[in-house]
Image (cartoon, rainbow, N blue to C red; front, top):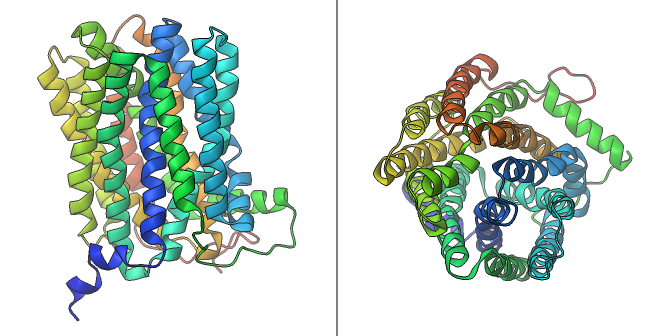
Length: 414
């Protein structure tokens, strides 16, 4: 059998249980991609404040990031599949509740923040669960294919989700989009019923908090995971303004509608789909660090151009550039994290690592939200400067060579 056959996408989909987990993950991500645009447009339409929209983005992400060490321990202890089902069920119920309360005019902004904070806490199970589940299900030779397909399916939902959300909001209002999201994520929960865990649940003599602290310590003492946390913090801080900036730019400067906003985000996803599948065909081992740095830097011109964009064509060009560059960078990030982490620690280490990686995005959105009330260009130019720093941080903080995994107890290679 040839090497190409042994590492084909067809063989990947025949791995027991992989296709069903991927299907559930895609449905969950589709709802999540709709949520990103629905939340911002919902707050802008109902509360009419970019600052409050930025605050909502922060509350929709940060609580889950703070409790990610506990979530990671639960994933290792209780099983990833069952906690993903739990998250999808909670998300369906609370998303529908937001729509019902909004229609009844019984949703003051503090209550909305409380609900999306709970969603943030549960969402960490599905986000981390799928990413830590795939390398446990899939043979190591297929990891690059798995990462390419993972990134590309994320991009597919980035195409469909925002476009569908924008269309639903434009024609029926944000509440209709919320009900659609609830139905989709409920299907995600159903699709995972009966899927077996690829490994036995971890047994630990420590308490839940003890395991959580061990996972946090493991990441901070692990040179690669620590470097990724620093580099990706700045990367996501730099692109954070896009969440608020794209809707304001399209609706305010170009007089488009919610459907146009969705179409712009769909182009981001389309570019990522193609780039992710192509990157998945590469052998990334030993090249991950350089790929991350190069394709992070490639996003800088896009942010600068977006700051001065005067028409939709320029915005779409930026979407193609940033969408493609971001997808290739993600494939390399997934690869280096999998290869340099002890599989025993996948749940705890991935939960902490992914949360530290993502924390820059809500901070970027929250900090620049008030800035957008005065200027669209300034926050995007600041984002470009931070993204350039992120590319340099990648080379400075992530070791060039793979190290032996660090023991969380001793802090020394073990």
